[in-house]
Length: 419
Image (cartoon, rainbow, N blue to C red):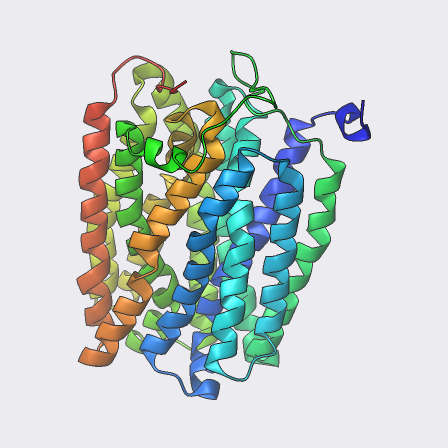
């Protein structure tokens, strides 16, 4: 028996380590939005070019995710996750040393490449640590890192950039990931399917090859989850990149104040909503069998009109209040959507399912929305008109697919897990 096999699984400890890494992941990812204005000034870039930098991250992220999905269902996961953390941290550090648009694009692609490994594989690792009744709550805790890490990216990025410059913000963001990656080697990786009522997936069992991605398309509930998620991610991509700059330009807040407000609103609303949405959906699921799907539909249905108010209001207080409310409502879906991605596919295909999700939501979602908003802003000379035209409508499309998912989900039965 190897040393790793003798280590205890430590589900809660593993959840803490993976959640900490996920927090750093989202800090690095959203840091760019906090320093758009000083980058634009120093490198003399247009709004469309700024949107292209964010799209470059997405190219590195979603194009490599199918590779990590394939590997994540077949080889030991710790090394893949650790390598991803090291790569994205290096890309973040080097982003602080660039002096041209091309170099910044290259290192943001590298950040996306590293985060693809972690984002594809870690949720399945957590799913293998917690049984079905506790899984959605654990997944919701893991994804608390989205609002907290993103908020730290906005707050710390804008503060550091204001005092020391935008390059220093990238340098300080890169180091925590390098340190936390070593904690992965203290953990024991669970067997795939270890927390299921059935036997775990044997290591030697043959698994489907690249055709597994085509097999995902035959799973109707998975298709509906992803279709709604694509539209929601399209809205969130434009929202996340442009909201601080929107407050700066339209409502004349200082760049650091806009980043500080958006970050604080994000961490408070996102933290509460992710936990509330996750735990309420778990209780709702136990009663009706439609709780996860219903929480997704409710989230998008409520967010769309609030987002319209946020970007159309002329009063800054109304706009800021609506932005905070929209963030709260959109984060209600965080835990349930990722739980459904994992539970609407066979156990042996969880990394593949997560990779398919990552590829779809970015290929058809937020790869395009930051640049589209930037393009319309340049064309019209009006960032407010660009945001209100693009983002609320995408949330309406998301609501349509997720309401369809509710109708397609049987009542008073557990969420179907394909086997």
